[in-house]
Image 1 (cartoon, rainbow, N blue to C red):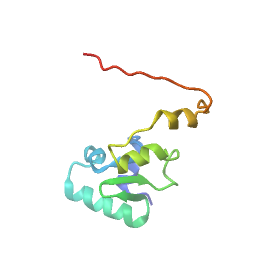
Image 2: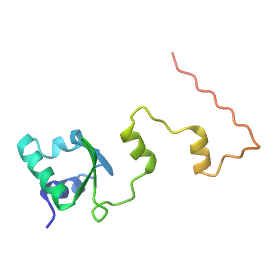
Image 3: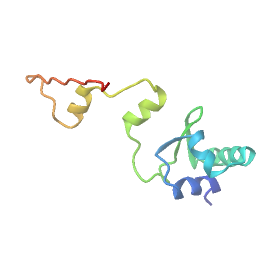
Image 4: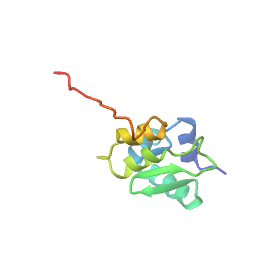
Length: 106
C-alpha cells in the first residue's frame, strides 16, 4: 500500500529531489506531515538524501535523478562549469578554444 504522502508527491509532480519546503503545501499540518514522512521513510517509499532533502524510491520515480541536480542539493553554491556542459553534450574539444563573455545588465 502506498503511503498518503508518497501518493500526494506523485500526483503533484514534485521534482525528483524535493525538500521539506516542497511538501508543506501537500500536508499543512506539521504533525500529520511528520508522521506520514516517518512512515514513508520506514517503508522505503521515500529515501532521505540528507536532512530536509529527499527523493522517491526508484519504483515510484518517473525518471532518473540528474547527477548535477543532486550535487547542487548537497552544495547549493555549486555550479556546472562550461567545460562540463560542453563535454556532456560532446561539444568540447581540447584543440579548440571557446570564449564566452557574460555581462550583467545594469
